[in-house]
Length: 76
Image (tube, rainbow, N blue to C red):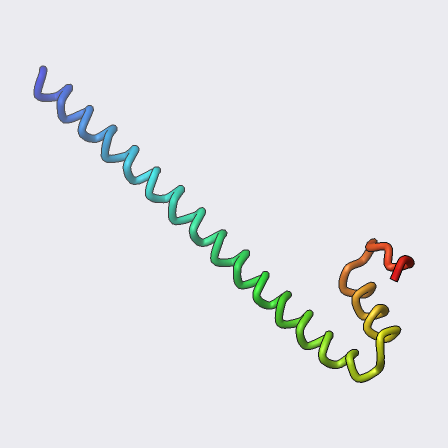
């Protein structure tokens, strides 16, 4: 009987470790996806900034307004 209880405890502990590992892996995958999205966003901003630089400050301001919807740029 004690042996069965000990085995059950070991099984429960093993399952808990597996669940914890799954949570950690899922969190890491989420972080990787968010980082990649952020890097893509940074690249788009950099590309857009270099293109609109050629057209002067007003064109740049319009580009920023398109990238960052809802931002008040009237004070610029």
